[in-house]
Structures are given as C-alpha cells and as structure tokens.
Length: 436
Image 1 (cartoon, rainbow, N blue to C red):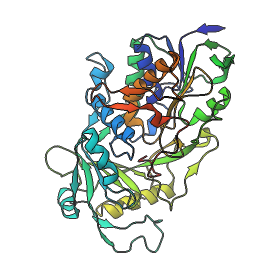
Image 2: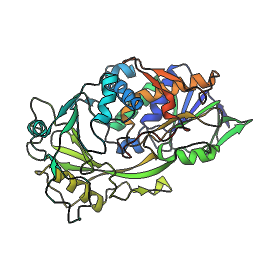
Image 3: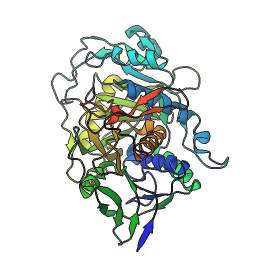
Image 4: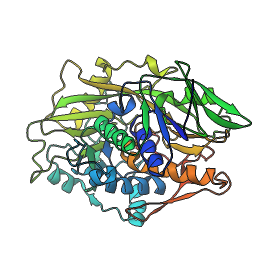
C-alpha cells in the first residue's frame, strides 16, 4: 500500500516533534514515524532538560537564548488550549564553576554580543551565594578510587552565573506538547513502526518504506532519529561527505536526596543548576528535596560508545552511580552517597565536536537534524524553525552548501548562520564535553 504526503519526519523525540510542528505550521502535510509508542520515549526521556547558554560558539549562544524565550512562553509557543497540561520552565539560574580549560571568557565574549545577562563571582561570593558548595579547585577530575581524589584543594574557584537559566521539569511531556501541537496543525503520527528502506529515484529521495510494508511517498524526508540516525543515514546511502562523525553514546543521570538546607538560597527559588567541570559533574535540582547528577565526560572516564543503540541498558550501574555521586559529594560535603543506584540511562547521538548537524545531505530532499543528544534539548523549540528555514530555502532552489542560509530569530531578532551546523563544517570550537 502506498500513501502520499509532503514530508516524512523519522523520530518523535523533542527534536522531531518540534520539526513536525513547524513544518505543519508552514502548510505542509507531515507524517511522523517513530519506533516507540509515544513522543519523547527515546533519548528525550533521559534528558536532564537543562536550559543554559554556556556554549563556546556564537551560534550556540544565540540558539539557546532564543529558545529560552520560547520556554518562558511555552503555551503561546504551542498555541495550546488553556486546559492542556504543559511542561514548565524553572528559572533557578545556572552556575558554571570557572576552570582553566573552559574559562568564563570563553562564554562571556558571546554573551556580551547577544545580550545574555550574567554575573561573575569570585570564590568569596560563590561561597556566600551557595554556602553548601565547597569552592575548592581539584582539577583535573580523577577516578574516585585514585589516591589523589581526596587531596586538598589547590586553590579556590569562582563561577559564572546566568540568572535566566534553569531547567524544564518534564522533558517527555515537553515532547508530547510539541507532538500535540503538530497534530492540531494536521500532522499525523505513526507509532511503533520502523523505517526499513529509504526510497530514492534519480538522485532524489522519494519516501520511505515501513516495516509492515506501507510506502510513504514524500519529496522530503527528515532524519531526527536520535541514536538511530546513523542507521537511517545508511539506509539512505548518505554521509559520505560528512566531515564530522557521530556515534551512539550511553549516558547515565542519577537521582539522590539533596543535602539538608541545600535549597536555602533566599526567597522561593531553588538552588541553581551547578556545572562543575573541575570535578567532572553537574548537579540539577529535582523538586526541593532531590538532585539529578550527571557527568561532563572528563578524560579519566571511559565513554560507553555503542555499535547498536538498542544494546544500551536503561538502568543505572553501581560503578557510574558511585563515581558521579561521589564527585557531587566532594563538591557538596553534606551530600550522602547511597549504596543503591537510582536514576536513568539513555543513549545519545553525539558528534565529534558535540555540535549538532542541521543540514541537507547529498541525497536531494533528505535532511538531517542529528547529533543533538546531551546538549540540544534546550534548543528544541527553535530547531523546528531552523529546519523549516533550511528546507524551504533548499527546496526553493538555494544552494546552502555554497552560501549558507540564515535564520532570523522571532523573539531576540538574532541572525543564526545555519552554516554553523553544516555536515561539511570544520569541527567546531568545543570543550569536548556535553557543554558543546
């Protein structure tokens, strides 16, 4: 059986659902295909959903700053009815401890151009603002069994604080919100089905074949399949001209009780998200009684790359839990390290430079929004608009490879050079971590 549509979007995570919404808003007929039973059931469900602006590239900062405005006006962004339950943005601030290999100036030079408010705290102010935090410098990060792990601090740390940062409380609900908005604009979703072939003719994509045999005929296919995106690229026969590679990476985020008094930072606000590359971890509030603890890929930790994303266990391991939570306890002396791990694990699609690829490919009509896991959740509301600008431009005859398109942001007016996300780019300036 053959069905016809304008666009097939593969993957209904927060990225794919955003793309579906914006393409449907533009008047196109959109069908979304996903292997799971609902929106955001893959990598999105394991996201810490941190909203921060600390990217080392100007395009990254502009995208995150624009996206903040979408999260702050989430119901308006979705045009959602009054009674629809929505994910909520928590503006608790983000505090990045200052480290030599990613100094505050790496980010503030872009903040000054874009207009992102920030505060630079010395060690004394950091201690006064966040009394539960040990301000010691322990760099470089070490395994927790290393004899030097508990060595005395070599100095004291300051921090870069962005008061407008924070986190989204329910990342999976955010994806469902986007999918529901896309459906209101006419998009349809096909759940629990996989793409088994990408159809092409005369150097152009012609649609996809689904596992039950249905062929979806379409002139545009968008790969937003997360860690399965490499498999879909291989089905399409694309990737030969990519200058950045990407692989599936399994990551864990752990759940622990917050130390007593940790959130007593004044007023009704929670303590901020704490990004600690000095010890190789980050700490995010989870309500007022708990914390989420994740890692920032320090060199001393082996990364769990996967050949097949389906091989990634969804359960946290004792070893990673102990490592990450012990590091968090080094920074928060009042934190206890439980014996039993609690948390989630997910599989991310990660590029060599931790910068996503939002681009066309050598197969006309086949587009990619990939390499997004770990640091692009915050930008999801904007990604749909970036991809719509890209698709409309290229399908309209613009040679994006020769002269990169520019997207002008609705809320901030900032122009974003889409060439920054090219598949053919030189590897972007990067911290080599989830920070991008």
